[in-house]
Image 1 (cartoon, rainbow, N blue to C red):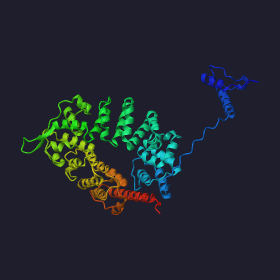
Image 2 (image 1 turned 180 degrees about the vertical axis):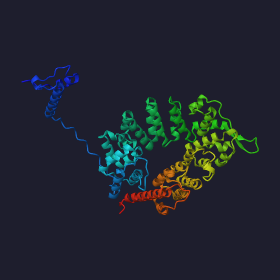
Image 3 (image 1 turned 45 degrees about the vertical axis):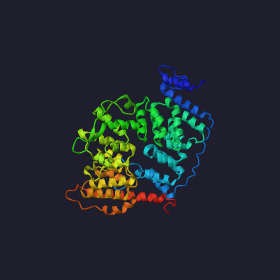
Image 4 (image 1 turned 90 degrees about the vertical axis):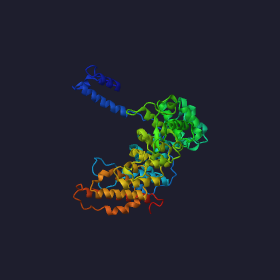
Length: 536
């Protein structure tokens, strides 16, 4: 009896080819078949033998149970709503949205509200939450907070969810306590980068000096990109105690690290670097009394010396920018804004920005003051540079672009910010309001909400199509206070079409307002369902 060929014999023959290696079969088994077909038949039989004779391996260790979540359970109505939100998928094709709300845009608000109430995610919904967070990075912090420790437990079992383990917010629960000095040092020395960032951030929040000392121990051995991220974590709780470490970082071999250290020092009132920048900027900007009225005269730096570079001034300007104006902008941007009233005759910020500037330096000087107001979070200078919202094109003295205005608005308190944007919309409509609306706190205040709805109504009356304002309409669906829903009822009917209106525009507007009203009602329902009594 011929011995059956081994699996290795069959595999070798298949790799070399039956024309180069004799088939390891009894000639009687060929039965007139061609060698390749006989080889495949023999391999099929051998495969069955191999599987049938395979001995089961020892069972692996069972995973530890997921940690218990002691937070209160989600009300049943809210759990049902979450199922609907997670099941919805963004529409494709770029066609009309109709009057159906976009549920995917409601999910971030739902998660934020659930987290404010401190609810635990239903265990069976954690995988769907992780899938949603995997697809949308903007959801990750809120989704991981809501999913809790179970999300990290699942992430260890599925590589598709490994982002949860890298997340600083998701990893802080495993950080050593303040009393565990050895655990803190071990994690700092041996942890992954995300774990080290999370550790540094947590330490900074509770013991700023301990975080700084930990960072100083390994600073010289860290990679440049890591030093930059670690240094950025010092923004939280920045104090004068951080100045020596930041001053030392001004000599770092990485230009980005030096720039970040200089930026942080400039935000520290009374820092030595801020004083140096103030002296430099003051030599460049002064009052000119030679004319009949006061004006500002500017003399930009002639050189960028090594000391300026050490203090964060970038010597080489971007393409198309003059060297001297580039250096001037950096000096003025970095100087404390308190420098200028004393330097310019005791004037207020409003009076200073109203002064004429000689030799076409006004744009450069005011743009630098804008950046300084944003960096130093100076509301008074921000107001002066924004100007009145009703001004022509709402162009304040230094607000040279919508992006500048949006940044300046962020330096104001939420109610004042909303009031300024409402005034802008009342005077100029919605065509340039999108960026400005994006910096307003949620939900929009009643005056701002009324201004947006009124401006949308005016656009509808003008006969244009609603998709010209789709960005603002989308913001309104997320940001308008649901209490404004009643004001939309009069806008839901299809108006009589004017002769000069775009064809069908009235119907499209009615559809868009219907979608807005339905979305606001859904948001109101979400709030009720998340109440501790579940909206009962």
